[in-house]
Image (cartoon, rainbow, N blue to C red; front, top):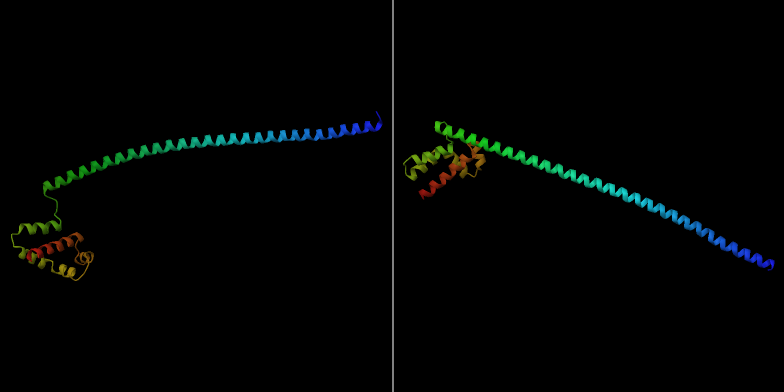
Length: 176
């Protein structure tokens, strides 16, 4: 072989080695970077799994707390209902005792109704009595004043004013 062939052959070997060497290094770098990526992903998924487990635990604790709170509130409601029932029974007993003793005072509405029932007057005489007894009240009402205003001015309860007006209307109907 001639020397120039040796040089060409040597050059070809060097060229092949030159191409082969960087590829090996690139392949190694790619392998290392893919290993790093796998490691990072593995770490990320482990962290996500831990976060998921902590969230699941937190939800379970919250559910248990809410259940216990609901049970506690239901128990309190039952106790309050029992207390209310006891108090209403006590109040009924007290009112019954007062009725039996005759110490309950009648309201003004009851007085008016009883007066109408007790008297044996004709409807015209009763209307005249109501008209006469509450003349100012009825004048205010027919003058366009509100029931609230009449109650304040006459120093009566609103219900009492309404009852007087209703009784006056009924008597007017009977008279007509």
